[in-house]
Image 1 (tube, helix red, strand yellow):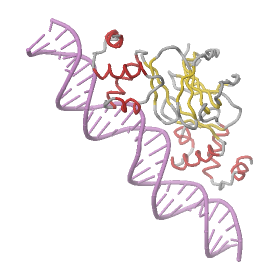
Image 2: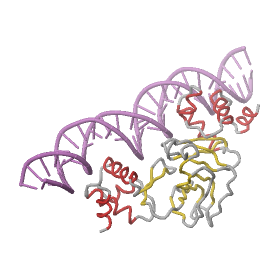
Image 3: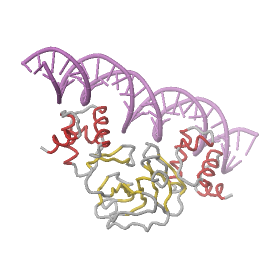
Image 4: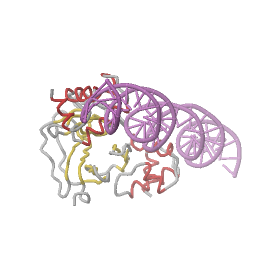
Length: 121
Length: 121
DNA sequence: TTAGTTTTTGCGACTTAGTTGCATTCATTC
DNA sequence: GAATGAATGCAACTAAGTCGCAAAAACTAA
């Protein structure tokens, strides 16, 4: 099971909270907030945030703030941009954008805001 | 005085809170949060947020969330991107990026995150 | 100028995402 | 299968932003 292996590689204790969390994030098609996760599994928010913060420190997940004051998390995989709709607040992953070079800066993440396909009809 | 005129054009009452706020934002070189503003002038946060929200509704200012859970505001002028440093959290305006076209979407804003010039030394 | 109406302000109470301290429970190691 | 160090859950807390309300300021017309 690759999730168990990943946890042990990082020298984290193998707890069911961690397994459940990573299970959810590895199967998610889009970034999730704590609210999204707690609808799927019962977990104290302190446990969620403490584990997520460890996962981020180990570069297993990455995160960003959306329009709704919530932070969204996803498993780090292929670099891609995120589109946040200013009308419906939906978050979508956008692949295939050439990565941006700006002199002297390292661009690690790109967030686009505007009007999504659904709302632009 | 262009600020007075602007307020009156929008049919807002000409109060000193509004004049002071717009004065600050028109002269700012980068987006500001409420915290930044209250260091410059004494203003109740409710007054700040209520006025800012009116300015946004009238497209006088625009805003985005940063890494630090705060919202940053600036006067709407030439469209440009923002760079947020993941290390020092500083926000910079980035001009001269070609605007991105994505089929079916309207891109209104671009936020880049990564490592800024200062931190990348 | 003033009297009347409406809008804005400031205060305090509230909301909500996220954090922290602490006692209990659990995973690991010998 | 005990010892021990880390992880969990709970409750209390923090901080950005919102809301209701009474007082104050802006505009309007006489």
